[in-house]
Length: 347
Image 1 (cartoon, rainbow, N blue to C red):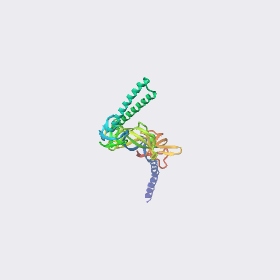
Image 2: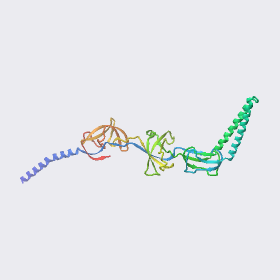
Image 3: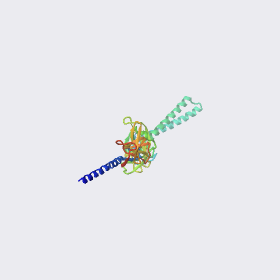
Image 4: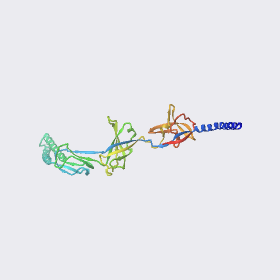
């Protein structure tokens, strides 16, 4: 019996001697806190705007009647391409041509009378006042002739430039009056989009900046374009400033038509190679911002300078380098020198 008691005491002593060692090992292991980390990387933090607008011609010419008459010739219709100086339509101008012939006859009559009066004046057979009156009568007759020449010229409508007929408001045989609309010509060599950009964003855009345009009518096709001009004033109601984007000169040949819906991807504040970390990794304090860098499984407090934030990513302009690893989020009582082990990654 005594032997059994002694054996039990011996075993109890051995167990008590092992407990401190086991507790120390567990405490040592618990000091390495499991954390999530993130690698400092170059990221595209550029801000982009997706805007849409209707394709329109940069220049459109509306031709209106400059005299009255009946449409005698109508040589074009919608969709026709025309060249500068090409005859588009003409009016029946019988009345105007008759007036022109009368004015021409009166001009010739006044010229002959002036020539006779000039001869008499040189021979001192007439007075200076009579000579000057006949000279004035000649100028009046010449002006009348030029007036009817102009009115007759108004009866033929010529294309002022190379273009495409986009609208036609008259038909053959129709009677028209002054200022009636006749035709609309569209210069399809320069198609543009007029985008409304916020006053807060337009400062980041420049004339000549390259952009990409996608057209709903031509799916899967991206077209390079360029900012041609930025309007000087904003709309009073919306505070939007119009930005004109010019499509390539061969856009018409590629199937683009005025009225198509275009979508533009505009880059605002370009930052394609910005060093960035998760915003949650940066701690802001009165003395400045800092991150916890993980080096050799230990935390190292590092002061940093921050830039812009895009979503979950925050730009770091100074303090860390690409490839370094930082604590993804500071939690609990973790301090500099704390031992950690990485169990997860962000980004």
